[in-house]
Image 1 (spheres, one colour):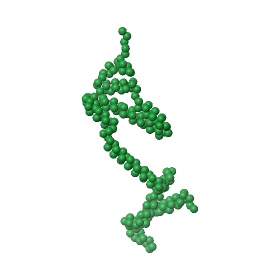
Image 2 (cartoon, one colour; image 1 turned 180 degrees about the horizontal axis):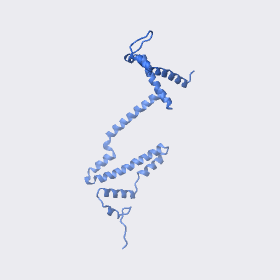
Image 3 (tube, helix red, strand yellow; image 1 turned 120 degrees about the vertical axis):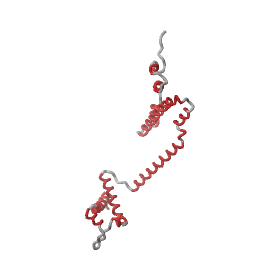
Length: 210
């Protein structure tokens, strides 16, 4: 019984032989002509398209070229079952993305950003940019924390370790909160930089002895 490698080599050799003939200028010229010889019928280009046998040969030539390219690149040719699985994965991924997009659209009014926007509708618009900067700062910390948590899980870490990574990046100290508020108030013109420098990192003015 022939081994798999022998079968592949035999198939390649056969189809590549046909391919080399098909690529030969004499063969191409013969196909372009309508003349015939005893015992041999020459097919024209249009006849080739309508001839199942010739079309099947040309298809096998193209498949063999792909197979040869895969072998030369070191990739193992995919079986029909593997191709089917990959196709199903692609279809499932596309359906999942479509479902997520539809769900996001359906619940877009219930997201944290939408809820915060609704909250700001009852506040003087003068302060909206300041509040949005505060929201975006916290939202960015949450995104970084989620990424850190996922990295731990993907690298084999435990759920507890992932939680610790999340809280590490999502938490905010009092010092950080005061600094962010100072910077944003200065940015939006609600505080003077020279005055803010008088406060320490805890938001307190230095005490003076009488």
